Image 1 (tube, one colour):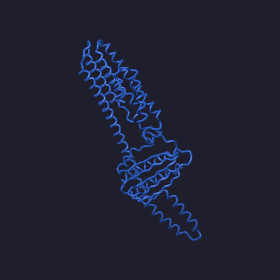
Image 2 (cartoon, one colour):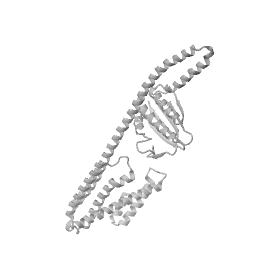
Image 3 (tube, one colour):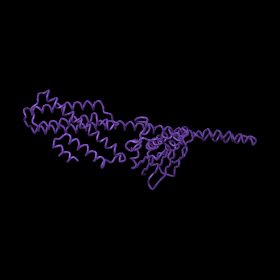
Image 4 (spheres, one colour):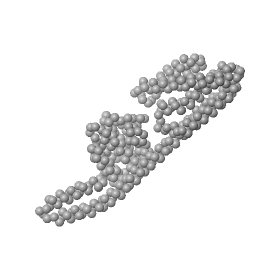
Length: 385
């Protein structure tokens, strides 16, 4: 495609050049582009619009160059040198407009362009503009200067590299700050469940003594009051039962987390079904337990709570060879996907934050698979012990 476009471009026929780009890009993205394979029309349309935007930017660069030449009184330029000028200057305008405007519109990255980044872009564009206008002075009176033309090409390549470097540095800073925020969130979540562990331990010690008192009350009542005493004791036990964490596994943090989330499910009218085999979870760090299960269950609860019909969450943890297999299934409505990951309707950083989960899973050479089947959302997690 590149070779064909190069030779067509050598003919210096603008309409034919533009046509080969439109046709070539359309054919290329239809057969070779791997994303959105089921939406070829949308894919081709987006690519053609991008080519059109690039063409408009290059045309704008050529018009801007001619304006500068007229203002500077530089009119008698060799045809070859003028062509080099137009190509180089239009590419510089295209590159800057792409990074400042077009790229932001078509990619919509989470990393917003900072003010410092725009200032650097402006300084680089101004420097490139002044540098090229100085080079143009060598083309007066029809002179040829191939070294100056090579210099212009180097300016274009340097701008291309530096703009990309500035963009990546800014995005790196953005994602580093995001990871720090997520790590802080995971730490706070972990500390919360540590506090819950201590609270439940104290509750169990108190309940142990209360149970003794209840039995004493039952023994003190005479035979004629035995039924009443039993009902009273059972009522006390029922009142205190929610304070006792369920023993799902031998992992205390996971027990408290599941007890806590199960209480939230009952409060929101979500039917829960938790099945856990005899699995060994001691190899998973407590903070990763809270990060993985806390986030996945929060997402499941959020999705199931917004369903109009049956609300349910099914959790199964089992062992397969040396792997721990976690299956979380919940009822859901319409789920939006972006880059094969679900996204929340509540804005950035809300609802479905899976970056922390994936980081924790990577520690154990694990894998997370998410899918939607009708009104059912499934998260399958595999961890290597």
